[in-house]
Structure formats: structure tokens, C-alpha cells
Length: 631
Image (tube, rainbow, N blue to C red; front, side):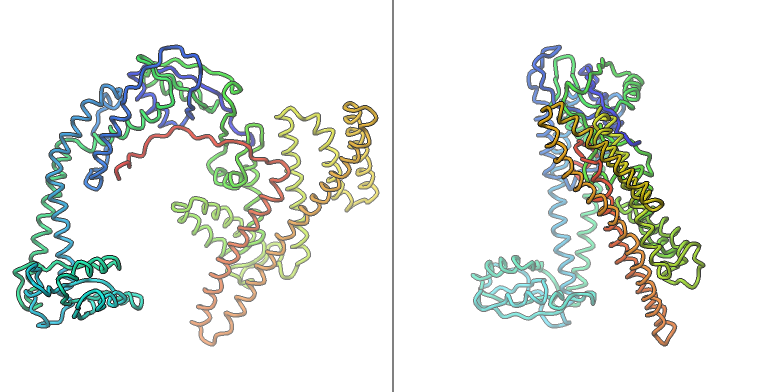
């Protein structure tokens, strides 16, 4: 778990007729990161550009113009044999089927567009007629008539848009009526119906200005009854009739899609576009396709077995990573630890020879969070929030572990929704024992920093630099261990520090001697002395920085006391309950955010800085398309 998965380079030679099936398997397994080939020599003659991808893109572009009318791609409409056929075999038939569908669908779609526009116009007209006072207008006079010198107009907008009716834009006589709607509009944003008369020459400019403000002109059909009540009934009838026409056209298009199997063809088109986009950087010959990329060593056998089980003809070769540049990195953790990789990725992906601290973070971060935010009720709320919010914001799944820790520390502190008079404290109450609450985090910080030093030693072993670690880093680790030893015996601690200094400066002096003779000893020692002082100072500051765990635990306890005190002030029981709920909500929101920030800070700046560099490149495996290209 602590070391990223080792990557191997794989060359995969696949028969061209089976490359679609091979890519489908590799994409489904997400097991290989394909890389561009730049080798000067190839095992076969590379085929000339066939133009398959361009042809597929052209078909897709023709369909994208009417994307809203396309059915959802459906894999189940394509049989297995046709799914695995090569693009060369599938494309001619696919082009013809899509062309035939377009020829049949375009007339229906054109009618649907007109029917949809007319349906929308009638819906707006009904809204407007519902808002006009009875007998206010002769509705028939509002119908569009290009022969009139002063034509009437009807527009729908908001109260703020009425100021558009200005004499500078033409001779206008108009009146605004409120549109019947909900009561939740902002002031000035209430919808209004504007009815007016203007100069025919100014109508175009007026309409342009209306549209620029988000208003829309309403089309009043000829033949409506004079009174608004009769016209409204007539318009509702037209709306029902138009909705029926629209629904029939939709059903007709759906029947065409079903009859022609267009949903399956869309899936096939998307799949072959993906295949050919994936193959764009590969070596493709008349008979074979040569794929190359990085595969996790732990999944190599799984990949080979899957290709064999699907009867894909292939040849495979493994090579060392050094010939192909820096390999990507894939962290190897169980599901419950993977969410804690968020901290690591936020700092930088570990390289192949760096430690992945995620397993330790799965223990350290909940402990720090719960120590600062110990409350049974608050922790339970965080668990619920994390459980439901993770679907939309995956990182909030961390609140589940943090909430569990908060519940545990809540029992230790005897705190339930800020109240310390319901549960007994199984350990202590922070307000009553502030020195203990501030002191224990220092011990925790010492252990965390010491663990980071050991992780650095493990990295030195992986990198083949263990000898240097023993010479330079090990004495510093021993000196750091002298801190707790000084609690029991100052003399023993000083002896350990002295021995460590002798050890360190002897090793540094010998290195200087081997490089420059006696002249290099003193410069090397003095340089190391300056660096040592800086390192010791940083270690002390980093260790003391963990006191903030206790400080925020006391702050949380203090806020809890304040909430309970405020909840006792109202005279009525309802008032007490309201203040209690609001107070706890504020504590959860405010303290939860602050504690999360502090936990992240301690991990990033105090724990990671001793060993993690983050020079790795994340593993980006080939994945299947999601079939939403035309969605």
C-alpha cells in the first residue's frame, strides 16, 4: 500500500480486424495508458492515411446539426459480431444508414421545429390573454396586419422593461398589465404584458430593442374573438390542437428511430470514432496495429487473460521502463483508503520511488479532526452530510471518517450537541483540563513527524541512498528522539545529542575529505552546521504547531458553552429550541470548515514536508466513451 504500483511497458501487436474488440476490452478494464509511437524502425510497413477518422467525423457533424432530435445511443441494438467488426467493414454501411435516416428524418424534424415554435407562441399567447382585463381590447384588432400605418404590438417581459417604451424609438402609445404568476419575483422583475401602438417604420427598431432586453413579441393570430375571455378559450383550443400535432410528429420520429435502429447506429458511430481517435498515435499497417503503453504490473496477467478469453489474436512483449521515459504512477490502496488520496494528490502525485502516505492519513486525519471537533451530535450530522453529499461532491466523503472520529471524541469529552450535562465524560472535558488538551497534541505531533522521518528512510532504501541516509539523516532522527528522552533525563538527552553531532560531523567531514582532501573538511562541516540549525529549528516549530489541535478543541468547547448559555436566555420553550438549533448549526458549519482547513494544513505543511516531493505523473488509462457525444 505504501509504494505505488510498478509500471511496465507493453507492446501489443493486434490483427487489424480485431483491434476494435481489443480496444473495447482494454477500455473496459482501464488497464493501459497508450502512448504515441516515435520509433524509427517498425516491424511492418505502416499503412497510408485511410481517412477513416475524417469520414466518421463528417457523419458525426451532419448529425450534430440536429443533435436535439437524435435518440440516445443504445449498445443493445448492435449484436456482438457487428460490435467487433473493424471500421473498414462497418463504415460504408454506417454512412449509408445514417444518410438514409437523415433523408427520412429531415422532413419530420422541419415540421417538428415549426410545430414547436407555434406551440411555444400559443403558450405565451394564452399567458397574455389570461392577464388582460375582460373587455379591455378588441383582441381581433391586435392581429398582425402589415398594411397598417400604426400597427399594434403585444410583448411579454418584466416591469423593468417598460422603460423601453420611449418616444425616441417611435411614436408609442402603450399600457402594461401584470402577468398572473407566483409571488416570489424580485422587485422590478415581475412579468408584465405590454400592449401598444407604434409607427410602422419604428416597429422593427422597437422589436430589436425589446429582444435586446430579453422581452419577446407575441404573435396574435387572425380570427380570434373580440373579447379577451372568448379569445382565451379559443387560444386554449388552438394550443391543445397544436400540442396534439406536435406529439404526433414526435411519435412519428420515434417510430422512424425504432424502425431504422438509429440508436444502435449512433452507438456504433461513437464507438468507431473513439477507436480511430485512440489509434491516431499508434502504428497501423495493412494487416496489424501496434499498440504500446504503460500497464500496472499487478494487472498484466488480467489483461492477457481477458484478451485470450475473447479470442482476440495478439502478440505481446514486455520491456523495461527505462527505454520509454518516466512511467506514470498508480496508487494501490483499498477502497476505504482511496478517498484520503485527495490530500496526497493535492500536494503532488508520489513518484514510483516515493512513499504513498494515504494509509497513514486514513488514521491521522480523522484523529486530528475528531480531537478538534469532538461532539457526538455534531459528528453524527457530519456522517449524514458526508454520506448523501458524496454523490455530488466526492471529496465530502471524508466527512464520514471525520464524523465517526468526532462521535468517538464526543463520548470521551461527554459532549452531545454542545451540551455537556447529558453524557458523562469518559476521559475529560476540554474546558476543565486545558493543559492536557494543549499538551497531548504535542506528543501526537512528535509521533507524526517521527513517522515522516521513517518514511523518508524507506524512500532512501527504495532509491538506493540508504548509506547517505545513515550518514546524514539518521543522526538528526536520533537527536529528535532526544526530545522525549529529556523529559526523563536531561543528562541522557544531552549525551544522545552529543553522540549524534559527533556521528553527523564525522560523516560530513569524511565526505569533504574524499572530495577535496583536508581543505574540504571544515567547509563541509560549517555548511552542515548551518543546515542543521535550520532543520532543528523547523522540527521544533513543526512539533509545536500541533498545539493548534488543542487550541481548536478548546475553541469548539467554548462555542458549545456559548450556544447552551444563549439557548437558556429566551423565556419560551420554542425560543430555546430555535436558538439551540441555530447555534448548533453555526458551530457545525463554522467549526467544521475551520477544523477541516487546519487538518489539511497540518498534513500538508508539517507532515508531508519531511519526505513527499510529488514528482510523479498520474496514470491515465484508456477508458470507454460514455456515448453522450450527441447528448
